[in-house]
Length: 313
Image (cartoon, rainbow, N blue to C red; front, side, top):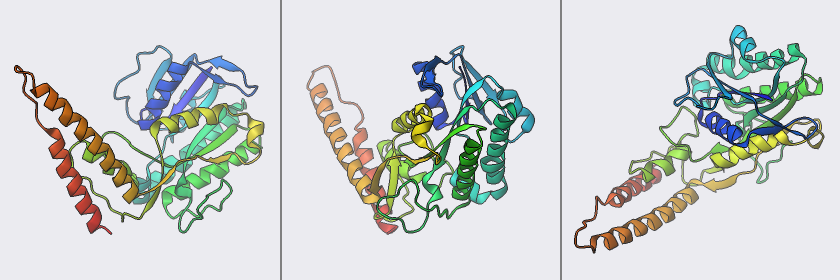
């Protein structure tokens, strides 16, 4: 089996690739598992650390370029995970770039599948950004989409493409609407929801977090691990179980900023207690002295965050 991941050098793309190589197989249309013999990872940037596995083929290029696209997908490509995207904040700031990658490149990918005529299974990472404004407590898959950002609109357009290309038999598509993924490691990115990870990640690293929304703002959250598990489950689920509407809202945790901060505080208190007790025991040995008390810095970071959050109400 040959598998393609667009956005393969990204946060989710690398984790998905790692899991696929570890798992070693995916299901086909008949529900039978097949070994993954080749995993093609495509992105506009190189892999930060190349995969050593011989099954992984890592390519750098622009999927909006038709020549590049036809070089990475062929009739042997059985499954595609389409994760490549310009994130929300960047898509809003640069409309042309967002349209070129999020819409035009997606259609070129779908048309490449149509031209080859082999109906690959395609999993598209959409977003809850297709919704906007006031929402009911329970948002079902068939709730009206009301995007209030260019990114949300672009995701919604591709969702419609995938439903129709599936109806026509060009692909076996499935669309997974991802909640905000939290917590992402590393530095903040250009996503509008980047702060959701930052308000947890930065205090844990002894840094100040900036929260641009009020504490009563509610977010729909999903962990990175569950996101990867969902992508794999979405791939393997039988087509007949999905029916004509291939769009699924992934389950997540609905939390306010205040609830996230409270959970962070509990986590930090447990960590401080553990670190303090560990250092106290360590210091009781005559030949040992405790190291730097990093938890005091984290206490200051927590206070800075609370002050910032309060000022943003």
